[in-house]
Image 1 (cartoon, protein in one colour):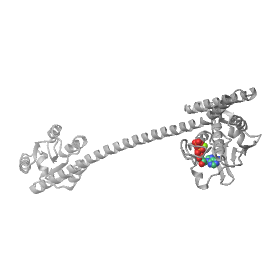
Image 2: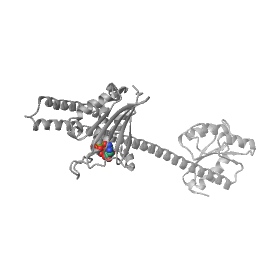
Image 3: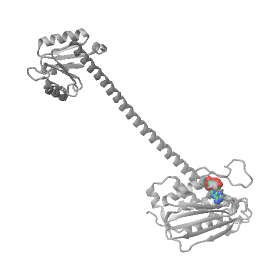
Length: 401
Ligand SMILES: Nc1ncnc2c1ncn2[C@@H]1O[C@H](COP(=O)(O)OP(=O)(O)OP(=O)(O)O)[C@@H](O)[C@H]1O
Ligand SMILES: [Mg+2]
């Protein structure tokens, strides 16, 4: 028998029979329990309000409320419902036992008592109760840990989302800043030309250069607007019916400010004059166009014969803009990497490079995809290492407005 239970446990005996009380009191106290007594159900309930026993030995037949009712009341009350109750009765009637278990008792002992049996049953139920308590504590601990874990997961998820958002904004910003390079280059070239040829310059070409500069400044402003991360609503307000032929023609005019484009490349334009206009953000599409033209020009820098072909075409559901070059082409194994941010086959600025070799940051195509997303646009590529590449911008005609 486990005497650890007896060292600290309080047992309440409820019995109207003084002799019984005395016998049990002696037995339990000698065994080491702290023993409380009550002569009827009501005074037992009253007493329990002050001191919670660890176990109750409850007589069934008593004056006033009987043992069953006492048990029912104790089981109905939250603070006392878990105290194990063992019924004591002279009756060994089966029906009574069933009723006892139904009211919530854990066990039954019959009078006259066998001391060893009484002690053994008390010990057993105290042990069960103490194990139950430990289990409840562990469960509570587990629930607490679980809650903490959920909170932690929630926090971590939020942190990750925030980080990802910041990273996207960072990448987009870099992409947009990257797009400022072209118009700034136009301004630089035009200003250089004005400066070096200031005296010889014809009035007509002078006004051409200033036109380039003004157009480039407009472009920079548009890019800066995108950079300011306008809200979706504001972006919607920027939608306008864009005719892709007009866009290409205007942008080519601006590109004439780039001497490499103007003098070193043969150009072929094939426009579908019937092409549908779409509600688009002009600045976004022109930035896409610029990136693709720049890539095409870069790809041909070492070639003797440089030809750029721009085609606009359409079918029932989409419009297409092909930008074809006779450049270095793309190896099939590299095709899947092109749209990854920072993927570039070019030396980065400051890195060692051949004279005239273009540099790259690897953000051009990534930015194009981001800029086409609001319009469900895509870029398709066909490329050949000897003939060059065709980059096709595909835009669905059905645009959500
Ligand atoms: N027309 C093309 N012909 C051959 N390779 C191309 C062409 N367009 C893109 N590429 C390949 O795809 C890579 C990624 O292009 P992307 O425009 O994203 O970056 P980049 O041109 O290298 O640098 P930048 O950020 O200055 O545009 C290029 O480095 C190049 O290897
Ligand atoms: Mg590029």
